[in-house]
Image (cartoon, rainbow, N blue to C red; front, side, top):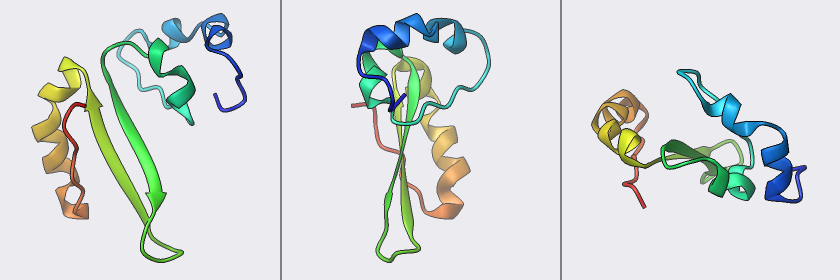
Length: 88
């Protein structure tokens, strides 16, 4: 969605239809459309690590459905020493 200039463009794409159901939808550069995502989603941020080859991944559950899954998400990611942030 990084090519979209306004939230209205996202709505024209039919985003809500893509998000309905039991599927996984990955949205790159989703900050622009955060208001259209609804209450429940998992925010994944990829950042630079200590060296050029390192990356950090931050998982932040948003909303009640993802907050309830935080413990399972943390267990699944712990072998990579990932910390799941609380709902902000």
